[in-house]
Image 1: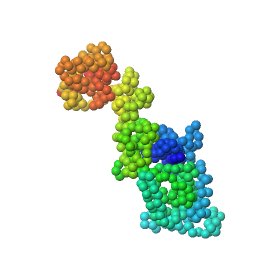
Image 2: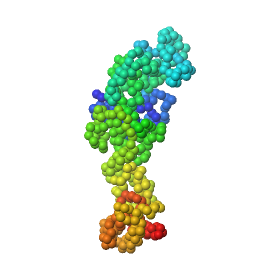
Image 3: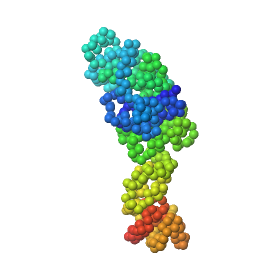
Image 4: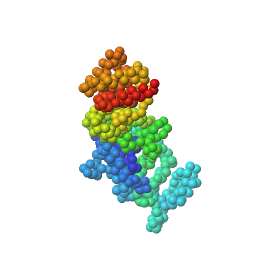
Length: 480
Ligand code: GLU
């Protein structure tokens, strides 16, 4: 059975690249009837971030990526936490020492610093100073409580492995450092705990960022030393912000949580992220999670880095918003509408119907309805419109004449208002746009509005509509 895991180190936020890794792990498991688990790799106490585990767990839940196994948390499967398993790793390291595949290292920080300083690039490989200490020497040093680490003994030769995305990779073992497996605090490095846990948790497929390609030979040498099966590797290229820079929260790029705060829907983000580096076999772009599970295939993964395109994400989010059931949309939109509209006489459900098909994110609502409480100052050149065949002068004439016509309307509903406006156009041998455009502009003071002239008039009510037209007449008169 296919078993995958998402193994983040808790940093306090969810990178878009990490979300994509988690999603691919989940999809590979689910599309093959396998199991997906979440494992928090937190053995590096120096990098511990308070609350970070919770962020990962909640973020995945919001994204619809749920573990199929793990400790029970309120009736759901939670994450395995490496620091809670810390006692199991030492025995494996000792086994390697006994086999000759690892050794105790007693080098001091100062000695290691010295190696760095004397190296050309300031990143010296460990010089194996302790690799050949005799058993007696080691026992004596341990007995004297000399601090130690345990290092992997990299053997001579080369290591070749196959990656599903990058193909066959061969590395000369000379280039690989005798990495630390157990740190001086007795805890495993994440490189070591990662391999032990992948084995103990029967992980069959490891999906992770391509930055781990260079560590993979070290992992494989560990698997070989233990005589364990090596998992299938699927390394994915980084998510980029442009041709040359990686998308990075540290450089101010949006994390998953930031996007949620910016008004994006979790399902839309997940859908977009799935396509960053994976091409489905058809040109379908909008996928539910179930559809992703059905369609996902590792052969569609690419090794060229994908560029995160905010415009495309916003388009996709808009499509998700359009497809939301109205009540579901309204329940989210109402919060923004109530924040942005202070007038109490506005039919918020009606405005919600108009905006549903016109926003990219829920945060667009504030700007879109900002004219409802009052029209902000706008430039009269808005009345000039080539396609509508109108300008400031004609608009002034139309608006002035419309005032008594609008005042005479008894049934203030959309059909009546629309007919009145278009009748006026017909009677005066004008195009509809020559009447509708100035009215729409006078009522909204904006180049675009969530609905047309007659709908705006209904929303604002008769009194305010006529007042706004009068204000527009004054504004246009003052330019002549
Ligand atoms: N803890 C590593 C990370 O946060 C996981 C690497 C892996 O998936 O093997 O990137």
